[in-house]
Image 1 (spheres, rainbow, N blue to C red):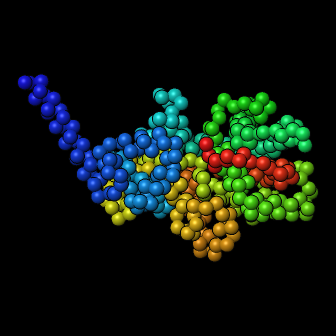
Image 2: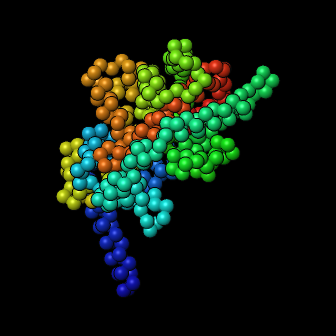
Image 3: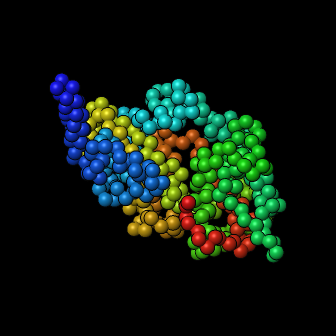
Length: 382
């Protein structure tokens, strides 16, 4: 009898805690099960299509949606900027602990203490910006030259033989060699050996693959970029040398393609949850109590109406057609791709240099000079 009473009390306490948690954020709409359990979040993560599902939940329930007992999701750019601002009272959530390489030690990515994180950023920022590394662009050019030569020697098809190159994986080899060269003074040799111990680890490679895929699967965009590259080749010193980053930046359609690629497929779509301050906060007109995890739906942010009614479409022209007011609004939101405030990506310059150089050189030396054949059963991502 005593045991039964004890079990009953435990169940009653659990139910009370469950419903109390459900009521705490009861004024925020979301999937019904999310009020009581994190099962919805687990199911979404297991689906392999979490970014699209996050976009859908914000479309259905609004820019602020409840996705767990103590978890919210925002797709509002202004809210995102506020949460990530330098003087924000929000702190990094427990999600960051899962990224630790050593569970007992933090690093720039995983450090949750604001002051310690700021100290690490201050120590590392000169290196990431290229100021403490001599010849950053020259190092990137060297690795890019090696990669282009490898493709030309081994992967160019002939009339009697079709060679199949997994360019997505090959780009991973390249970006890993670039980063290792800048970090250690020499590459780890993934391009040369055509293998990578860290496949899928580089956000720059993700951005390159996404942008390149969107270009080559859109004939009109493909043709416009080809025309711009042909013009550069005809008016400058040809295509025998790797173009400088400065020269790449003077190509408006290439820049539009890069911006659009980062927008429609941001390299990082994890929610990177922040915790509301103890006194709580007002988000989208709702009072949110302290200690609530707020996830940042970056893909949803970049589909904001500021980008037009066709925001879900890869269309570089939007960056060339927008008036000054709209363009400034688009740029302001787009900057969030690289973070904001004290969590803004330190490697922006290196990432942009890679994006510009690789897309130009691949286009100039290979894609536009051959009839590129894609698999008939092509899926955008597998």
